[in-house]
Amino acid sequence: MRLLEEVNSSTFLSKKSGPPGSDFYSFSVVLPCSVRNRKIKILRIIARLNIGGPAIHTALLTQGLDPDRFQSVLVAGKVSAKEGDMSYLADTYGIKPIIISDLQREISIVNDVMCFFSILRIINQEKPDIVHTHTAKAGTVGRIAAFIHNLIYGGKIRVVHTFHGHVFHGYFGMIMSTIFILIERILAKITDLVIAISESQKNELVNKYRIVRASKVRVVKLGFDLEPFLLSKDKPKVKNLTQIFHSGESNFVTEQGRTRDLTAGVVDDQIPRRTPLSNKMASPEWKIGIVGRLVPIKNHKMFLESAKIFLEQNPSIKAFFLIIGDGELREELIAYCKQQGLSDHIQFCGWQKKLPEIYSNLDIVALTSNNEGTPVSLIEAMACSVPVIATDAGGVRDLLGNSQLDVVSDGFKICERGILCRDNDAKGFAGGMKYLVNNKRLREERASAAKSFVVQNFSKERLVREMELLYTELLSFL
Picture 1: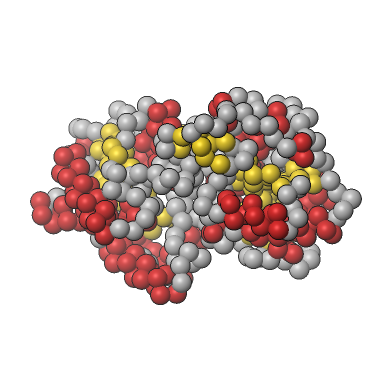
Picture 2 (picture 1 turned 180 degrees about the horizontal axis):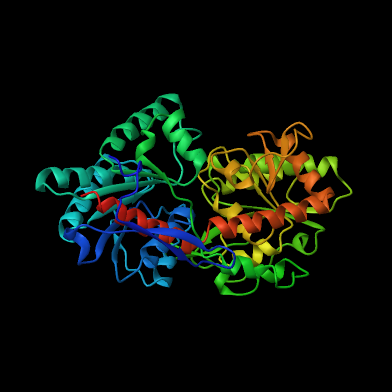
């Protein structure tokens, strides 16, 4: 279709306001008569509202679209017992999602078939103008259901899918990865519009994996409520990190009706709300943190290996490493820390809600992933003016910008907005961390540039306006 190749002639340009310094221009599109006099109905489907960027993204869009022009319905699956639950976002934004218990992370023929019929029934009941799917499982089942509905009822429901990341690299072996690539190529044929969240991701989808032709892809960057992060830097740093983790019940994330003790990462029905943290966190000279799910693709083991190399090579630097997040690898990573003699230098903090305060009290934020879409933790850290160092995965390069110098040492480069390292290179990552520690001016310059970049590119206002335009433009070609 010609949607992405030209803008409909019946458009006009207007200026939109976002956070300070982030005003932008937007096209408005004149809709056809079939939808001009009523609200555009969006059925948004996500596999689960677990902690992470996709849940934040879908909640913001469901709540943020202009209520005078759009009606949004959110469908979500069941959060796995091993994951942190972010369903509280729906409550915060006044969203009442339709929960499909069969829509789960794990692959199950029985559950997936039941899920398909549930979504097909919801589509038939809600009669949306657009079905917009997020994440792989929801994207597969949701797009097939929309296609079958159009086939049976002769409908014209438009289908949009957002790739928040992909499973083509780093998750499975060659055979399974090839199967998923073939499935996505087929699904792309029944999708009206594919959204990539970065230029790097678009390049992978179009050129590297040949999932979809370029004319069907639109790059729409993520958007967030940046204000809490932007304001966090104005608050004084705490003298003792334990003040943050002991500051109240809001630091605790509930999971499947249980309380998770964020200081140790264990789950129990009877855990006290406040468990004393080790004194090792009290007052380190340098606090280096990583935020994310404890799953293989995030490669926390490399973070720990880098921490060990850093500590061994720089005994005079009093550094402490925090792992914020939880997941299936928690016990394995704790055991690895003990085996490597790192227990006195590492703290597993579990999931936290007061992230702006935590980021602003870190000196460096790290990311060691093998595969990423656009990493939320880096965007949040950059908004808090915290220097970042990350592996060259997915959309990371788009965030950090071009390399301004050649490789300074084996394994890392200085970029416009942070330090970029090779994948699976613990030694190079440790070298990058040392370079940041030893160069105050570089830290300040990169952090300032990163904050400005995030404000300009990742506000929720910009995201909502772009999506409103995209939806109206999509329907204008009916």
